Image 1 (cartoon, rainbow, N blue to C red):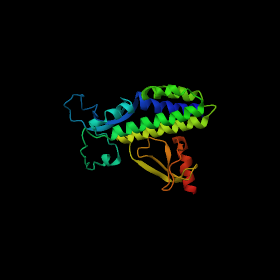
Image 2: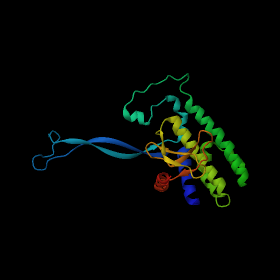
Image 3: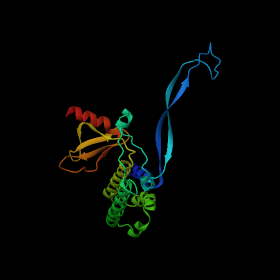
Length: 234
């Protein structure tokens, strides 16, 4: 359990401070030559069809992308973009669209304040948090590893915080597909609603209720079938 938590924490910290690999799908035309009648030359009349290919692209860190957000790159991957729906762009105020910068400021303030509280409770050296935020994320998995066994509650709190910062950054950068509600099942921890990314690229996570905030509980793909069956029985 601890090792799985630390691995997820490393992935989040890598995405925030170092960069990450993203799976991208694209289509290419592929010709199907008739071996009996075609020599395989470029000018043949053999039928062709588009086939889907995938590759991994290296992306810069989410922190770096937020700093560059004022360029207002169009990275919307929500379902409406797939449907070809028209997109209305609103001109940002000078010096550009500041939403990404606000998100960066929010993550920075929240990270230093929240991690300072956790380090106090865990008995870790708080002066380490005087490093730049990129360096903090690079070293955070090691720091958490030092108290994860003795204080698993604080390790889980740290993971949930990094989950939140990754979601915040990707939402501001419009690189996250919209969420869809996960069936009729509720969170086993607090009774809140559950959601998952539209493209099923995320864990199922608690989104709370109209009256209460989410508790931070998440459910990996390995537990989705059990959640679905629980919803059917309910």
